[in-house]
Length: 533
Image 1 (spheres, rainbow, N blue to C red):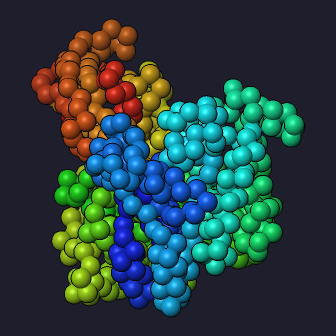
Image 2 (image 1 turned 180 degrees about the horizontal axis):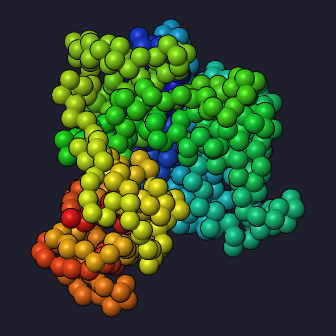
Image 3 (image 1 turned 180 degrees about the vertical axis):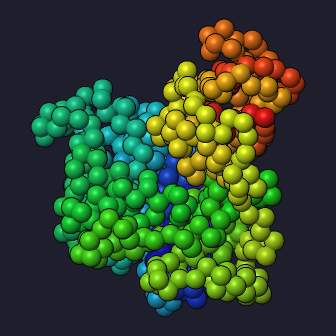
């Protein structure tokens, strides 16, 4: 029953971590996974490599968003304006012991091979380019990379007695490996045919190192690429598929899918909340999660080692905001992992969660005020009735198979989306960056309005369209334009929902709706229904 706290994107003090341990223990969370390293800063003292905390732990701006959209540079700790921090080894010992006293195991995460820009800026010889600010992935062809990683892990193992050591393994770009002479030589020497196998080579080597010291390797589900290490456990975040693949092949899995477990998503109507990365994950959805997929046999289900919620903190800069995002949603995960599904009751849990919020506030925490929850987007709670309901949609440009919603019927089925593009009701368009569909009304129809809803979630590269064209036709070939409008797309609105409509009087059988992404930002265009009245 785990919680992952990202202390790289924004650093949080030892005292703050201990305060969270108090709450986590009270609500029966028994694993605290600390995301200690990432591009935004290295957060643990390693005596053999002092530059990790003298340089890689400090950046030019305290706010991750400003830094990420700015120079992405690191500075020495003693330079004016240096922002960051790290835990000394004594700090780590204190946190680990405090957690042990509260029956919580602390699991460290040391990212590899990707998310390592901060390391490679301090020690550029470990990158393929050999220069700072060029690569995000360690050079797997360089033997010095393994010397570094094993030396770091040796010190980590001395500080953390946990069964598991998390090695990241996610989102490796691998591009530099394709042309790096050292990586190509490694592939040739090891008879590897693809760079995915090069990542797997690194994971296998690190696992052997950990297993020889009595520890187990834990990694995000990308560690499946190129072949899973023999004793590895998969933390499944890109849906449940990785976890299911792991347990069906005899490996343990920890289930933490983004759909139900990523607390950096909005927990209420986005317009009412502090900026988040996007998504919509209310308390009720966390509570609805079942970590054991129905497709698993009883024996396979035993390999589901647990469930975990994760708080990545790119958009969570303050301690108060961390607590706001953690509570009460973490309580839902604790109960999900603690209780048999048939014993769960949302009304009962909701009543207790309301009381827990008051208890947390009385203890000096800053939880989301559940009693004032707005809830789902109103449009998503009822079927949309309109003239095009059930009518055939002709796609002049394809939708993305990653976000198909209900497929070819999605835009005229009456189903509206909630506050997130990932809810299975919003249809996404990325190829050609445009929505272009024609609805066959089946007969000449008097039409007075055509409306589609769009969203903008800047953190996820989802943008409002830069232009919309609405047309009508008798034959589906020759169209008369009813409306053409251009829009200024700006990142100043981090999240926004808007309807773009035509109103008037027209006659025709075919209605065409086109929405074009802007050239400056590109990205995704999403809509959920084209409403004809």
